Image: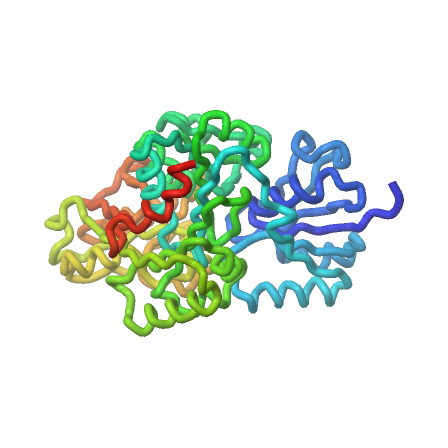
Length: 440
């Protein structure tokens, strides 16, 4: 085959596998010698399996912690480092680039032409400039509009393959029992369950070419439900991107969020009702500068609490969505909005009662502050989350995660569930944006 370019793919168990599958896997010009992993606990030390690696990789490909990057480049004589994960600052991307180059390798960011697959059915993608901007409720709203218009909708979710990669190659979720059958983590349940209860079929996994072939057989429209601020894996016919006025400027300083914004057909400025005026103005100004042709829709994600009496005047523990607080860097979410609206007495800081892997999460992300991220990437972590909640001396718990954690374990104190849905300031704006898809 001649000399092959030796490659390390940097990832977080998602985009990295997709980039390998569609760009590197069958190309004899490249030899992928390793993956590195970050962001998600306990995903390094595995191997991208032989059964998924193709004929050029008969022993699979080992996955190392990202901290081993420079050593890998030097020891394995790596010539190219392909950066393949999302929701990171430009400063972080260039610092990693410096590490790769200092060790002797070139640095690569693969783009849409190399990585987006074409579908036979219309594709609507929902992405964002940062995680925690409101993709989930927007995707649900898009699915509701399309379903009411008579379209068969299939959701394809950005990958979260944290278990057995061969078993997770193609996953289909049509019933809640499928979540147990596939041994889903809390993060997976948060993304899949809201679609399932609305009657939508969800696909996810590792091989997004095989997933697309199956999904479009039963769909009139494929809805790409993005993760982090990553680009879609399928070429969209309508690309919807959310920006967050609570984090103004991030739309121009995080990878690949700015690329999403520049590519967008529709930009949703979410959380307008709770954002400071200066943040809203800055986000709108930046959006118009980067993408003057995009249709802009302003929206809120109003928060509702199932029984506010449980928390009013009480000392409460607030449990927020995990990724939003960790690499999403949000200082608060729907739980704090609900706490303020219910006039709680105090938000209890849970950090001194954190145990095990939850304690480790606070050590890795000290900026989280007095909130509890709903981490649940393993059975042990779910158990540690339960122990932390029950040990915290609060009078009540605010569950501000996309699923009800009480379905997974018992809590020793009263609790309430917080829900949030997308609401456009101009009713019908999103349906009008979807009109060409509905007419197709």
